Amino acid sequence: MTVTLKLKSGLEKVVSKSVIQCEISCEKRIIDLLREINFPVDMAGIVVVDGKKKSKDCLLRGGELVKVFPATFN
Image 1 (cartoon, rainbow, N blue to C red):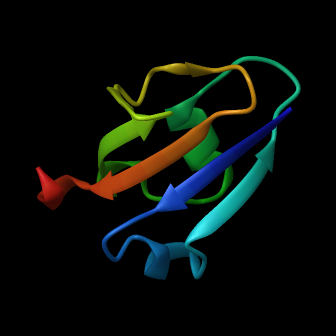
Image 2: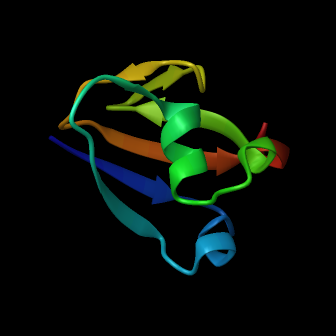
């Protein structure tokens, strides 16, 4: 199952990509997925999953589009 992460408002500079495709084999929390790509989790503020604001502890099942905005974006 694939999850697409879109890093917004300058966060793409942290990992040198604005869109990242991640393969997951089971349910995974957003915060754990960010750690896997070596993204500093404390920089992530607002997380939007398929158009709905969610917490970083939200479970992903695959097929979702996740947009991550910086903490200062609030």
